Image (cartoon, rainbow, N blue to C red; front, side, top):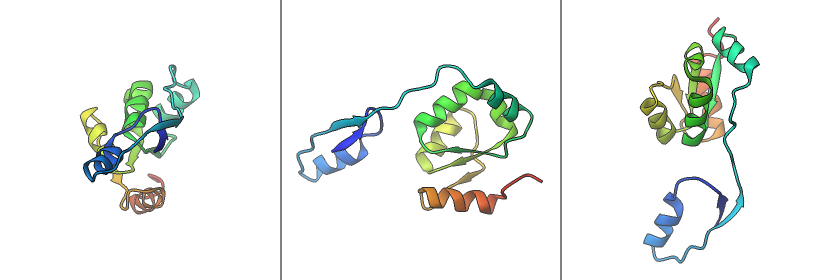
Length: 118
């Protein structure tokens, strides 16, 4: 199974439970940015950014760590229930959650939620 260096073990665990032998190989990696982009902090703080898309729990943790309260001026769009749960655990309520839990579902959720606050 080709995968990232971090992520949930749901698929390999389910395959093993079904009797498969699963070998995992990391084919790409992701890393956290250490410092927030100052222009993004300013844009978020001023309410210039209508939506922040959050497509994984790792991204949820990173975006909250980097941008914190500045995120409260924007609406958060979550890709699915696990990401929404992580956001809530961090003290941030997603404005919308994608259904289906895909890029197209996320786009549809944002459109339904209103593209801008204006």
